[in-house]
Image 1 (tube, each protein chain N blue to C red):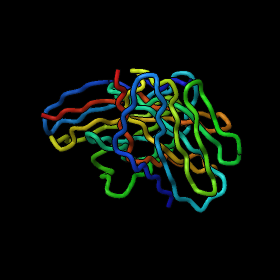
Image 2: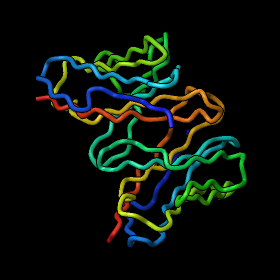
Image 3: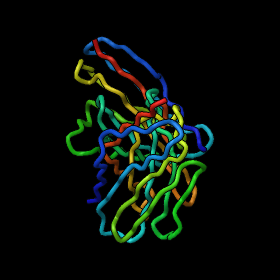
Image 4: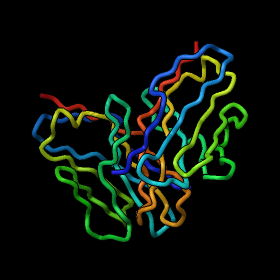
Length: 116
Length: 116
């Protein structure tokens, strides 16, 4: 079974600075999807960024980018120019490529605080 | 992104009664929906996978008779907590799989259940 590990329960960053959230995973599959979801205090789960394992190029979405290291099974999220609205829980998630009926496997999350 | 609506956002019920939570995909057909439970300061715990027109697949340890899941149409899945008890109080959140090539999963807003 796949597992996702987020080793940083809490992180903090100064406004306008850059922060990197770590995520590692374990799988025997070669094709899969990786995601970062943001959960603000409202509890709404918001998709931040997605990476297909077969793509070598790291995904980027505006201020959010990932460092995908497939061999190391590492998938870190970098937030540039941090804003107060970035404060939230961030969950790394894995999903198999093979079947559409499989759910996301989540890490335990990292709580990010942004300091003004 | 795709929109998943969950209702109600907040519900308070008396111990021993049943309560229904709805999850709707508003702008796409969702053949598969997932139900999660989230305890305070924890990650999302998968309860069951709901497939349209068939019985839900429950995770180990989740009581099928207590948490009834129905997925009668391609846009609606319901979770009914039967004979609710205070320990069932929690945040419940649904998600739905889109039909895009990446099978992206989007989440509803979640429902807070308080059993008194």
